Length: 403
Image (cartoon, rainbow, N blue to C red):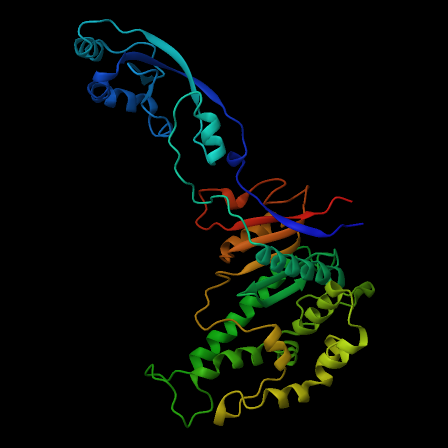
């Protein structure tokens, strides 16, 4: 039995947690007073030895109040011309090459910096993905949405996998998986498909709000630009979705999987009930009028419409399901894909879903259960840590209480 989620652990590249790996190089000892002159002579030769892979190593280190060691590189001997210049600067005294162990990799955390600098002094450059500490309020908020995704997976996923996409703490899309009926219909793919559906219709509506001369439609026209967000929600309402996309529940084999959940508000209500454990019982359902989830939306459609009233003044634009707008907000007018969206997953995503979220410009991914066989963000690979990709997001894994 699963225990309660008590926190979140950020998934960093392996370099953030690895131990020190040492490599051998050579150095020579000189008097402290001539350090600057020797470094200027050694500069080009040392750079040719170290290239750009060892910029984290300082070029010298202090031994005591009088002596300093200059780092040479992998060469055990200096070229004659450089050696003669160093000897001349050193008042004719010969220099002796010594072998030292230095860190092969740059430190990614301050802890590594302190521990690895013992062998040879290092530079610490603050990485882009520095350790972040989430506040309790942020953790609780993330845990709530994570629990919602878990319950959606249990209710609607053929493999109990669920996904919730949020923006500014408001649910934009959610879905269970349909893997048993179609191998590519993972919960992440279906949720992203919902967002893309909204975006397509939003731009379609936006296009219709302009004349051929790129001017706004006048007051005499049916819609104005301010109505677009509500029109977008109307276009994505359950009735419209069912008619345009023939989206519904797959009854094959008696399963309750949703190819693409047409009534997301109802699904969220059911998930909220699961998260809250039905603590409020019938009293809460009487107040909200949403206890029956999907079926109850049609029943209370007129009531919600009356409460919402005239959303756009004289234009008489009313939304079919006002509860759905509050719970399941339409996308913003200037939204680009899933930029700044948070993805809450019941399971670690596979490579297909992880790349889909990268292409969609997701901001942060938070998942519960690991996927040892095909996990792309923790178990098998860490795609979000690959520098070659043109987009990266933060990843957190749920921490459960020890039973």
